Image (cartoon, rainbow, N blue to C red; front, side):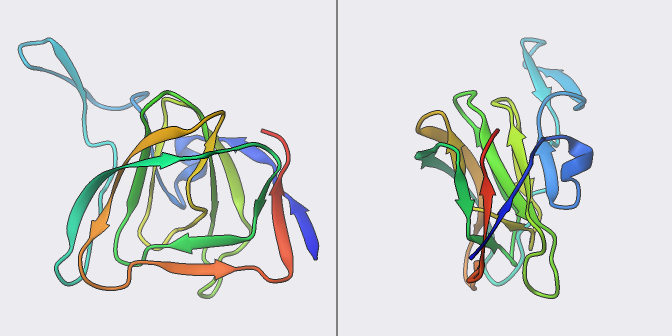
Amino acid sequence: MEIIILDVRPLTKAAFAPFGEVIETEGAEMRLINGGTTERYHDLADVEVTGEGARVLVSIFRGQAFAPSVDITMLERHPLGSQAFMPLQNRPFLVVVAEDDGGKPGMPVAFLCKGNQGVNYARNAWHHPLISLEETSDFLVVDRGGEGNNLEEHFWRDKVFRVEEL
């Protein structure tokens, strides 16, 4: 089995753009609301749902913590909607994504998300399921509900992508 080491990059809007959007207040449009007592950081992600009976779901996922090294042997994607993750406890997490390569994921890319950053995976973007770091963590998740198969998985049989250091 071939083992390929992935370098972990800092999460930036430009670097993550091929896979979706970074959700963060930095650089976002801010509006004062509620008589000036609340800052609203407006329109941070393009939530996309498509298909029969599609609707937007808001959930909390509780992810068990991973510690390096983390082996990446599969990625998934959602053909009928985007999927957003925002940490609720200001803890970092790891994101692994890949561009599409003829219906399967290409070379994975790993990003370290700060605890005040989230991601919105674009519809059909290949990504690894939630990788919490440090300790069990809760995430606000916005994704698609409704009829239809909104999950496609790809498992590598002959290689492992490994994140050794953060």
